[in-house]
Image (cartoon, rainbow, N blue to C red):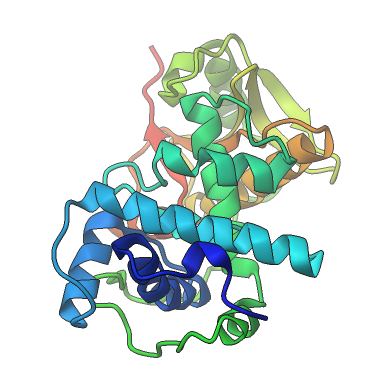
Length: 296
């Protein structure tokens, strides 16, 4: 397969897009994102370009997205937009110039105007798809580009690897403390500190998988599943709650996609005591949001 037209040419945009492509494939295979500023720094470090304003990288990123759309059409194979890995350092998601590629990939509607919460959920879901896609080596070979095996400094997350706990959880009937907290959170949606203005939540919300979220908040702009842990919950139970949030967010987004809706699904861990430093690190690593509340 020839190099797509969007990547051909000797203008700065096309040349930079061809240089960025192997870097983004490396990020995809290692489950990482890269900011506009980090992209600029890495291209300079490798001697592949001069410094430009970070926002300029939206143009070659868009060229990469367009090239993959062309390849998708020729192959008849759905390909996630690799350019979604180029993100704003502050928000952790791509700029609005990527909306066309996000919408087109997830629901085939490239003209849909997205709210901020919808953009975030669509970006996060698409980035996960980019990381899971197994065809990047084949595509980069078809394009005649050279893959890179060199790591990108500054992208590695420093943490101490630790096997997940698989015991020490709370067992037996639901405690009165947990039941009280669950009902309190449902009646106080502001406690989850969401930008979406939720009304009263639903307790013991049932997923299609037969899992149940402690509390579910719904709104036209998005849904949030809350996993609650009372003051008496031990660290093992809090760690379990982090992994439950990972599962609930994936399930919620799957159900929304099945209903033909924007997968604006989230999960949050609500606790009555602060997480330890190690649990905060785990939550950050897995992308789980957590809040500590105090009932009045």
